[in-house]
Image (cartoon, rainbow, N blue to C red; front, side):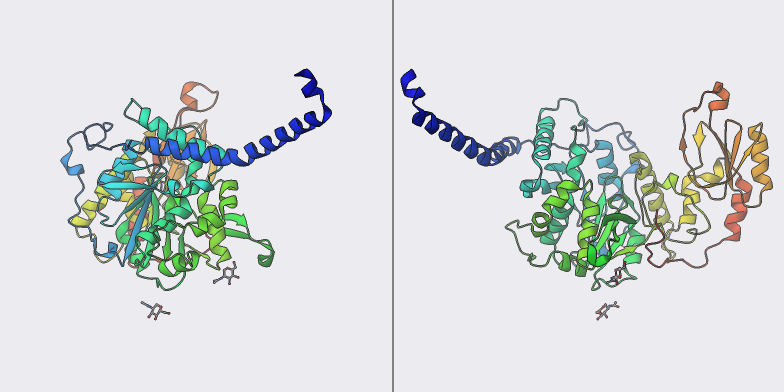
Amino acid sequence: MAAWITSPRKLRLIYFALVFVTVVVVIYSDAIDRLRFEFVVRKYSPCLPQIDESSGPSGPIQNGDQSALPNCETFSTSPFARDGIQVVLKIGGAESRERLKSHVDGVTACIPNLLVVSDMEQVVGPFRAHDVIRDVMNVLSREDRKTYQRQRENYCYRNDKEPKPTPGGWKLDKYKFFPMVEYAYRQNPHAKWYVFTETDTFVIWDNLVQLLGRYNWTDPLYMGSPTPGRTLGQEWGGRKSFFAYGGSGFVLSAAAMEILLQGQAGDNTDGSQLLTSKYRKMIRGDCCGDSVLGWVAAQHRINVTGLWPMFDPAAVHDTPLGRTSWCQPAISFHRTKAPDTLKLWRWLQEKRKDGMSLGRPILFSDLVDFLGILNVAFREDWKNTNAATFEKQFLDSFESCRAACHDHPECLQFSYHHRRCHLVREIDLGNPAEPEGDGDSQHNRWLAGWDVEKIKRFQEAHPCGQVDWPAPSLDRIF
Ligand SMILES: *[C@@H]1O[C@H](CO)[C@@H](O)[C@H](O)[C@H]1NC(C)=O
Ligand SMILES: *[C@@H]1O[C@H](CO)[C@@H](O)[C@H](O)[C@H]1NC(C)=O
């Protein structure tokens, strides 16, 4: 035996055989990995998480508040027909039930043709979410494929009601953008507009319908809140592209869809994903799918129609209501918490019942009423300085800060912290704030105030006789 091995020729043979086997294993390990993946996906396919009404978290709807139930009688569904506006909601495996319910029972409750896409098959109220990642898993990096598997496994084995986010689960989001666009077109190639939203996007649908009525769907349009993105190539002089920020929702016209998805027939059911395959490397390398989409659109000579602040990446209570946007329609907000989402939805329903369709859209100035600003002159442990502070003074009491705002002709609200008095020209509600700093506990508190009388006077002086539809701009950005 020893003699057999020590023969130099045999040793060389063994050596080459080992090298050969190693090469084969390296080449096929990815295939093996993929096979295992297929197996795992199949294994967990029957596990469809259900969103049922009786086991959700205690939200406003579970409390038996009947007025909270969606009422779509006053909602005009006709624009959301097959050949009208196609709405797509993108969700994820780690989405909280509360957020999903704020859509199922609110924001998207009245959209008759809603398509829901996810990184996992899910049942959401009356909707079944299509797993768009399943369609394109060859595009996922190895690590992300593992995350995708783990997410499914976690979901199937979860024994608590609220799904816990899978570590790295958010990284799957970027893979969903192209498959989502491709899926929407495959499902409905007849729409004039495609609107893409997320679970923390609030859309004022009536306003969106009016906005789209002002544009022509036969033009290649890509609308939303413009955000600087990836650098374009040499032929563009190395300029940066813009993308429409996904969080506040974005719109593609039928013409833009056709340009982007050329070669993908509407009745194509074999699941060919041309865009997704073509840009797989870029998708793997970028943080965000909306950014890659913007770059690809620019390659197809489709520029973003920038409509900030109508498409607003901030939440309603973080949006400064001021002179510039006062008479402009609010189309969408991002980062809206589930309870606020339902509140805003109900408020809009009341508006509709009261005949809000006074022929004009909901304007930013109308939101002063929604936020209840005129009922709060003062809040403790609260910060209302999201809007720019135009003047800061050192004053020794909250009362003198209030007086300073009152005496300044442009000041509408103020905050007080560490003896600093911040005067603000715009109106916003702001957020609860923990004490901050290393002074004594009283000094560390944030105190917020609104000059209600001046705000009322400001409203009276700026009645919005005419709706201000701002022209698209890439200079006016968040
Ligand atoms: C939209 O554009 C097309 C082609 O330019 C034109 O024929 C059509 O009349 C336009 N529609 C509207 C409503 O302006
Ligand atoms: C898109 O924007 C670039 C400049 O940013 C401009 O040169 C180009 O003409 C625009 N394309 C269209 C179709 O408007």
